[in-house]
Amino acid sequence: MSGTIGSNILSHSGTVAETAAGLNWVSTVVTASTVTVEAGNGYWINTTSNACTITLPASAEAGDNIVIVDFARTWGTNSVELDSNGLNFQGQDDSYTVEYTTDGQSVNLIYSDSTKGWIPLEDDVVADEPVAPPTQKGLFAYGSTDAKVSLKNLISSSGVVASDVTGVGTARHQLAAASYGGDKAIFGYGSTSSKVGMTNLVNNSGVVGADVTRVGTARDNLAAANYGGDKVIFGFGYTGSAQSSVTNLVNNSGVVGSDVTGVGTVRNALGAAGYGGDKAIFGFGTPGPTGVTNLVSNTGVVSSDTAAVGTARDYIAAAKYGGDKAIFAYGQVSGGTVSSLKNLVSNSGVVASDVSGVGTARYGPAATGYGGDKAIFGFGNTGSVTGVTNLVNSSGVVAADVSAVGTARGVPAAAGYSLSA
Image 1 (cartoon, one colour):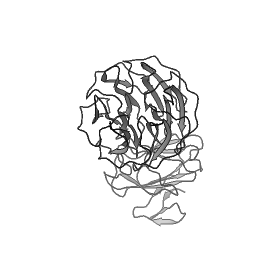
Image 2 (tube, helix red, strand yellow):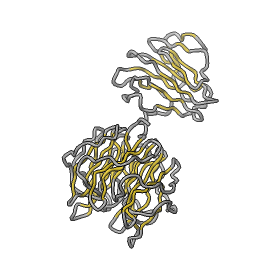
Image 3 (cartoon, helix red, strand yellow):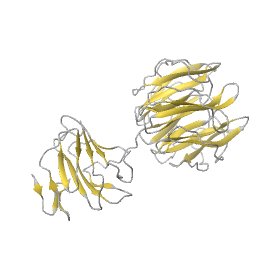
């Protein structure tokens, strides 16, 4: 059907709903991989042969209306992605991904204002939300040779580790780090000659900022992970007198919150990573060593212990890979033997059994995601410090050693930053 439908639009329920402005249904079915749409129009989008990116208008007024419909019930095979073209979509800027992947779906978009931007008035059965774009680069920083250092090594979006850059902030080791705000990072806590709690923010160019005064209990050998899409949780650690399960939440501006009473087995020398898009997992550690894990909700709530799967070990590292999964690897098993075992974590937080290790067995490495869906483990201690790295592909396969670049050191930290490759 073509032409203007009086004062009505077709809703996802199959009924005809009134609209003040009316809607013109464009008669030509869209089959291209890209299309730019205009307010006041409805479009049939046929993705039988390919996915389609739909570019929304560069300017809009309150009440502007666009409807898109799955013409051939193929969006589940070849999706539709919306480019908001400089305007916001449900309050998020256009660096966020908006994708519709359900067969037979229709989406009725209304423009609100410059703050919230385009809002789906109806999107059939599925209420999709924007998905934050993944970080592309990373960095290793801090650690210990025989002395504590504050060196950093940047990681490119293709996993290439750069040479040393002179550090900023208090030299220390046994700290933790994670991404926040989508494209930045935070390093925090650790040990100098005593336990400390200062943090250092990293901007989206990989520049490490000066020390920020401590918030929360000073401790080392803790872990950190991204959760909620753009926030961070620091958790567990050793205060110098006791193991801890205290956590500190970090908002999407990099501000660290005060202590939250711990849940789960008190321990240190564990790992943590994001999974499932907006959740996190803490796992393994000492005393023991142990293999218990604790899931973290998308609001930063830590759950009680999940029984161990895989070989118990401590001084382990973890990172997100594959967009929504996690990997724990390396560490030290009972008796102090170093390991290169790995345990993959599904996008629902289920930890898999041991997989034989690849690369130099060691304890105290660091790990981070990079390149959107891959990970890297680096540095650590075999009995002496090392600087080797191991890349992890988007399927969770760990590659052989890459020769060290930069100063060999143990127990550094690592995190992702930058949305730009």
